[in-house]
Image (tube, rainbow, N blue to C red; front, top):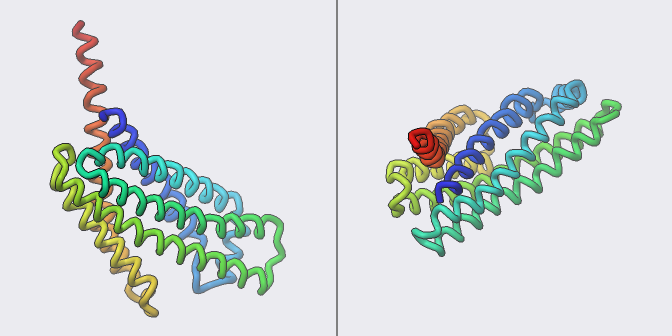
Length: 231
């Protein structure tokens, strides 16, 4: 179990690193859904950088899929049925993101040796919007996953109850933001507020869980090293 917890902690940490890099350092710095000309120009002029962002997303998805397995192993003793359910929703989140990622790869291919034109700009914006919609739908599934995971944390004798509460709050943050993004026509006017809600709930909840997983997973290793040295 310690080994699985350690794997989960490392996977979650790498998801944070690769996801923040790909989304905030790359994608958001290049893309403005309200400005097709600037977005197309940015992607073409920073084509290698855009490719690095795609690699970051692929890394993120790989470790997300790894967590489907490892978190199931950690929570299955609490409730097998709910652990399966949590795994299914996290898998659905990953699958929607993978489908969305295909649109970004199409953009990468179409901007390899392009001539900037109105049809190209329109195509790129359509692909970006499709990616954004699929990722947002996936995050709604992810929110349900966190809700179930948080409940399992409250019932678990291994996971601290505080983390269970934080994960439930994180699920609410993701669900409210994703729902608003899909339904509110003037979402962009309140985007900063919804994103702050995700940061205050989602990032804090998941980061706290990641820190606990790393601490719990590597604690035994440190003990074993100390014991071997004393021998």
